[in-house]
Length: 485
Ligand SMILES: Cc1ncc(COP(=O)(O)O)c(C=O)c1O
Image 1: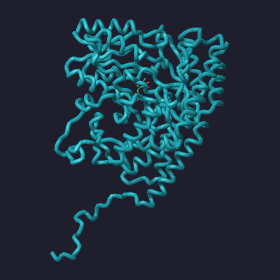
Image 2: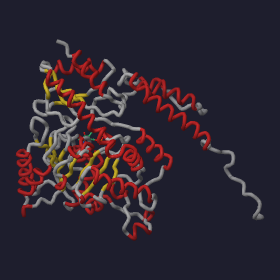
Image 3: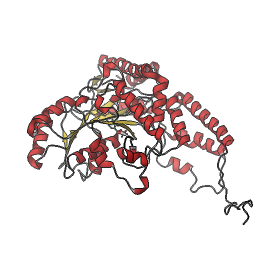
């Protein structure tokens, strides 16, 4: 065939309807408008809708339409099916669980990341994604005043649950594999137990052979005397101290803070040679964000082998974004590194680059550092401190109302912005109060079991970027009114 004749496309009749740049621009503007309107109007919606199981499925067609419905239909469905059937986590009256706060810069970071849609599995596949992540995590070492040994040793994970699992795998690698054990407290997040199940240390959440849960004080802090007894029992029964201990700095129930240095000291005292060789992981998923303020730095981290904290909870970075640091990356890389031929490349082989695939469970990885970078640059450190400090001050105000009202009692001392309280009238009354408060649709609070007596406990924790002091005042007014005489 002469060279200048065009080669016919063998699939010319099958052109996917990709958006043109102009279509994308116009729909993109419309979508940003939709999100901006959603956020601006959130306060007018109920925090939680009265959706029943199956309502959304019933509103959706059984099968995909044969022809594309057009974007007007998509926006209509967002308005009529999706938005009215959500619990609105960014709502100013959302005081439940822990926050999962979004922000303008966080959302823009997600857009940029989605637009680039690179896969940062290797340095070679996305140098900027890798090095920006390393840089931002090193900034955070300074911002949170973390030990210098964490510098250059941080990675972004999706969630704290993944970080804890990875820490456990690294701990097992450091211990040389085999039947390792894990100790944490009864108030540790369920993700620690789940990590033990995934890693094969426990066959069920109740399996206590190699997963030991230590009693806590009434406020939720690990009881170190019980901890020491548990570690000794493990040593007697298995011949080894735990390969990993997971301490919680800010428990999910009451925000209690385990004594990280004390845990290390007790283990060292039990270890032959006076030095425990295991892995001390610190889960600061929620409370860690507060450490951006000098008055809320995390204590004892020089004793930690790894730390995780979630900017997606309380630091204005859209879900998902968990920061994970290790003191010594060698065990982590031993646990997670594998190099098939198709991933070999000159940069890896020459050394000196980080391939973040070796720091996580999956191979592929999102460019999450962008949204955190945007958030840090938009708010600046003082802006982020203001965000944290005002939530803590508001919760202090809320706590004072609880203490001053004889119908209520605090279940544990306030931890940063988390207030745990209940009616003196007991569990049933407290449960009924929470139901009535949440039924107003103006606010949403959640509950836990008190670490001491297991009693029904209401948790109040602000976090949305849309929450203002008047929403906190309103929340207390509703609670006080619904509590009755
Ligand atoms: C102390 C603690 N650890 C871990 C988690 C789990 O977080 P993630 O959803 O990031 O896995 C939570 C969630 O609230 C938590 O409070």
